[in-house]
Length: 245
Ligand code: NAP
Image (tube, rainbow, N blue to C red; front, side, top):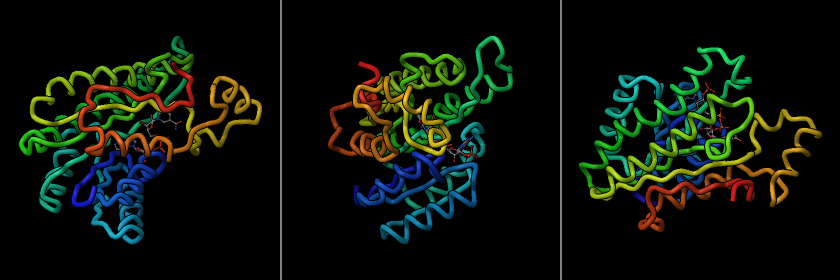
């Protein structure tokens, strides 16, 4: 990874932060795009201090093309090019389908699906010109299997899997690979709030018997982003302890 530059959207915290840290540990320069500008800067600065790579934390709203274009211009000026894009920014606004508000549908589709398209469109132009690059999209197992209470979220993540395949087909001839990972239940701030009973119920659905960690997701992303996955494109890897087989 040494000498490569990676953009991680929504990388200020959570799974994106773990991905940024691992890619930095492997030698990549890191650019974090997040709506949380101060936290993006703080995370980027900490990664630079701890791993001795070049980093940049910048404000970028993945739902707005102009915001992403501005962040991309600044990144290319500073780093010369972009080798890796991890489309990680994502949110949930859960509720049963018949009670779901239109604004919750629109927000989730806009960040989780349109945001992936906007960032891919912008960064791919740089990669296609360079005739190299790797894009990794963060989907979810619920995009494969569905989940009561997550009509908007599961539809957005199923969309990400379709978008991954189409972009992989469109970019392959120019040496740009596109893959996705589909995490299952991952131990994050969100899942830490669950009661023991809820966690027990979740664990009983997972053949490997425990929740995953952000590092489990980061390891798969790093592999797909690296040249070790040079012959893999258009694929979705489930990181879910065997929930989906
Ligand atoms: P998280 O901790 O909430 O991190 C997501 C980051 O994205 C936050 O910093 C968030 O900022 C940022 N973001 C939100 N809207 C954005 C926008 N419009 N533009 C740029 N950045 C934006 O979430 P996470 O749990 O690490 O999840 C990361 C990814 O993994 C998501 O795509 C999620 O769907 C996926 N995933 C998570 C799990 C899980 O168990 N946690 C399972 C499967 C898939 P704000 O805090 O301001 O919103």
